[in-house]
Length: 342
Image 1: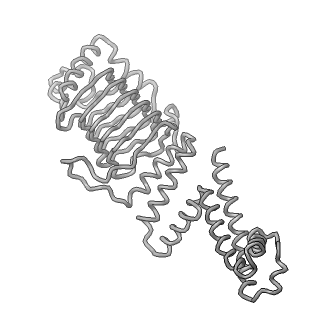
Image 2 (image 1 turned 45 degrees about the vertical axis):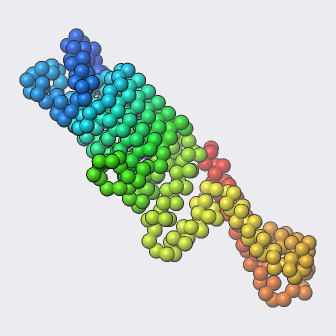
Image 3 (image 1 turned 120 degrees about the vertical axis):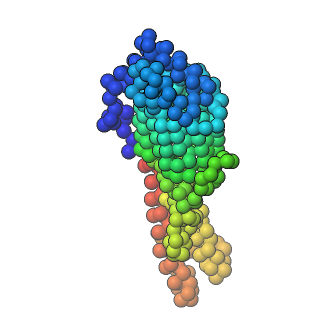
């Protein structure tokens, strides 16, 4: 369940102010420019280590400490390599920037604000977003490779386009109606040696997306991803034949309880099936009315059964039972969809 940032147990306004304000001092502005030049040059594995060990990085608490750091209006094309390995971007702010080809390895992005930024061909591994706000952010052709988590983040107008997401990525997040997530690519980018997407993981991936839309009360998208989640369970996760058959019946006849038109079509098919027997015996007009009387239980033309054989009487009773069940199912599914909007 999504929790507003100010209610998160580890959120501290004092810590946020402490780490953000330090960059606004005279020393902080000089240090920020120095580090920004390093980042523009591609950063790299342990890019702060030597300067930190030489005591050149002032108030930084460690060689990985970029808490409260800001990126504004930057466009950086990174060289190959672990550009941000183990960097702590807690309380950081990224605005109006485009990062291309960056690699975030074991990075921490907690309580951060990312606005109008674009991540293109970036790689994330063992990296966590926690309690952060992302607005008008675009992830394009990115690879979320191993153990990445976006947890309890608020996403507004965020796009994940053509990304490799092999495992569940979203946990307790909130999406707005303009946030979109493409179906994940089945393979990572060329040159990356990790396993392909396992179809058995798709259900949990879609479940996280579904719950995120539900938290944002985007009911239409929440239902859409619920359907995709159940589809994947039926196709890839169920093992017994009976379970699969039951799953496919639920999908095609009811849309897993969220598609009333499918129930209506099923009712029409069943009604046509039974009507074929009665119209053959009693003619089109009388047979159709008799079948309708059975299906909707209002008993029209039931006197014709006095001259009908035993099999037709059994079919009449069976149609009445099927009709009652179908109407009840249609009302239930329709109510489920309508009440879900409230």
